[in-house]
Amino acid sequence: MTHTATPKVGTLLERYRAVRRASDWLCEPLALEDYVPQSMPDASPVKWHLAHTTWFFETMVLQPTVRDYQAFDPQFVYMFNSYYNAVGPQFSRPHRGLVTRPTVDDVRAYRAHVDAQMEELLESAARLGTELPEDVIVLGLNHEQQHQELIVTDLKHLLSFNPLRPVYRADGRADGRTGGQAVAPPRWVEYPGGLQEIGFDGAGFAFDNESPRHRVYAEPFQLGGRLVTAGEYRAFMQDGGYERPELWLSDGWRMVRERGWRAPLYWEPVDGAWIQFTLGGFQPVEDAEPVTHVSLYEADAYARWAEARLPTEAEWEIAASAAPIAGNFVEDARFHPAPASSPKDASPVQLFGDTWEWTQSPYTAYPGFKPAAGAIGEYNAKFMANQYVLRGGSCATPRLHIRPTYRNFFPADARWQFSGIRLARDA
Image 1 (cartoon, one colour):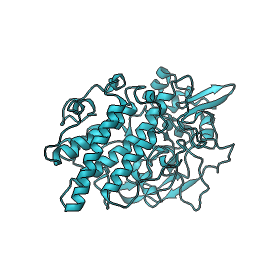
Image 2: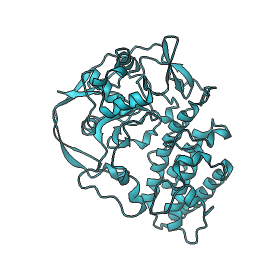
Image 3: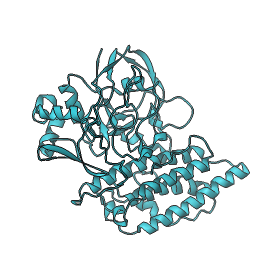
Image 4: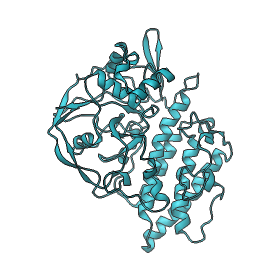
């Protein structure tokens, strides 16, 4: 079943209901046991994601807004706080998977309690015309959409450790099979560069790290017309890509040796071929589909091998600013990158969806950036160190959650997200 996307228009109540339903839809195939384990410190249990997104609405909206609000369980303020120091201490992140109580049923009851209170608040405001903290509510909806993506990626990482190779959704669309589909040869799209503006400055929602809009100067550049494919990445591997230190950043080469990287995450060699774990179980690696689950280090090494480089985030946004937001997103229920479609004109394809695209840009504040006061200001600003920017969204991203100015960010060694490669080079 393909999930119905959150509507672009409608009341705030309709949007709230749609986003909360989308989280439930992602959980439909799960067994009770799937909700609790945690596969690594960077991932979280599904149960925790469901509770934390509910904690946000209770803590940031209901408690400050509703007179005499009664918390579902006062202990949840500590248990399901992620990193908001202004709210209070948090339970140890690496140990979230050890928390068997509250149960999944308790978390479901927590969500139902908060949903009832939120719906009453939104209905009352619509009926009486009372003022709401709408900006915080909309932030909460986008926050939950971020965690919907994490439910998918964290669950995939968890299931990959199971020797039974479990299938998340066996509906024929999660396996990523392309049947040997051919892919168009690489091509380059040219951009003249010059003084440009990037960053958000429009109507609707954006995270604070997307602003303020500001000027950048770009030298003339070329951008790859599509994402790098698995077949192209296999050629890099066959040419000794993981054995050639001259291709790697120093820290990346250290990761290769210490962690034994020889292929993207989830790839395994079998009888002279490569298979990969997907949310549809183990499937052959198809040459036509975009390579995914690679780190920045791997993306950078591949780019050097291909006599190219990774784009800057400014170059990527310049190219994407006029592109339609269309592609393979979580609502399509494929849960795997799809081969590139044939280009209709000279523009790049796959700028949105399929895989997040690594850029060479470190994640830092834009000129003039100022975080909001209080706990909300901790949402992005405190992470602006030792991470790199990714752009474009992936097959696990909600379609209406992405825009050309959206800045995702992860450490250079992260591989469990649907992260891929688009090349760039100087014109």
